[in-house]
Amino acid sequence: MTKPLVRIVDDDEELLRSTAFLIRMAGFDVLTYSSALTFLSMDDPTRPGCLLLDHRMPGMTGMELQETLVERGETLPIIFLSAHGDIPMAMQAVHRGALDFLVKPVDPEVLVEAVKKAVQKSLDEVRTADESAQVQAATERLTERELEVAQLVAEGLLNKQIADRLGISLPTVKMHRGNVTKKLGVRSAVAIARALERANLLRGGEAR
Image 1 (cartoon, rainbow, N blue to C red):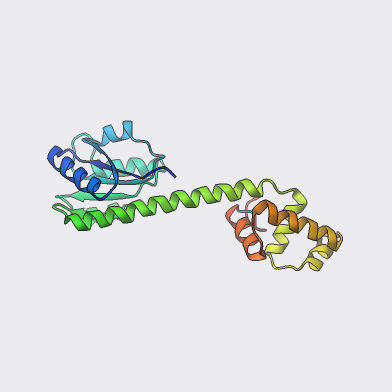
Image 2 (image 1 turned 90 degrees about the vertical axis):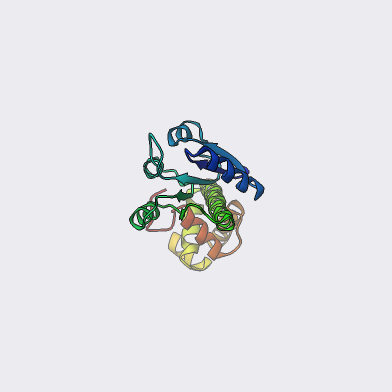
């Protein structure tokens, strides 16, 4: 997995430098931007991490940047840092998905802990997305009959019941079930059900 990156967007150059120094000392890679527009034009949204974001900036405010990222479907965790924050603003930011809203000057330990939490959230989301992609790819290797067997296994049916339901022999069911476990890399009926659920292939879900 790509090493996480902490982005800091603030038009206060001195604060930008000091905050970047603090976060680097905590062991993170850091990139700084003096404006929201510069961030939008230069940032790599595929790299996990988080965004430390000032609110009052010329050109585009932090809240406007957050709104733009939400519209783009980007899920980078955001921590607002503002000397001008108020409760309605903080509530609006959190409602839009911001992880935290801290008022300057921020206690260094509080800020570092907030960054650690945000970065871990980003890494967890990337890991979950990767696992889902792997499961999706595995389910796509199932034949139509293997998928039918897998769906019935997920419903809790025994091999004999599946054979009766599909009008096939018990050895054939066992063969297909064996193929399913190999292709999905699982062993139990519960694990088969979880894999199909992730791929949205349980009966009653979206069509394949």
